[in-house]
Length: 159
Image (tube, rainbow, N blue to C red):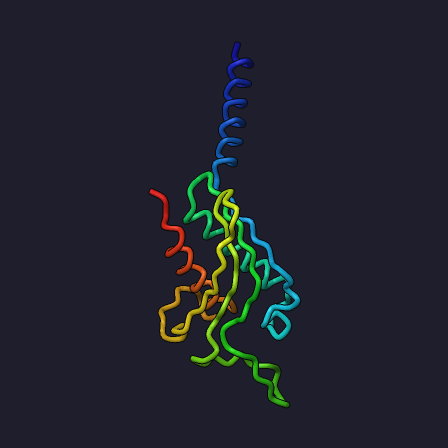
């Protein structure tokens, strides 16, 4: 009798775990022709690192802002990182931040099963004058803050 009860409890936890896993929001991120992105070739990060960090950040934002069963598809079409790389003959490239070199990300997104994708270009012209919660050592701190703001505006946190 005790063995039967143990199996019942174990099966219940497995089923609840499966239901919980299915109830999480899903964010699918793709990159359209990343070799043509504005800043991918001139970046201090490796291509794979940049794309995986942005993908993970978007998935984390989806967990925070989307409803349990929502599916968000994002196709990133261009990335222009904040700042620009300047070269000096004695030094390695240096990332220089100026007001005119604001971050920009172009993307298309679709929430759920709708047919049309919405195209948007995100740009943060005031990126140097805003309070940024990401650490100074984070090379994508300005892009992450811009994506955070877009998610808050576009997908208000479900009640």
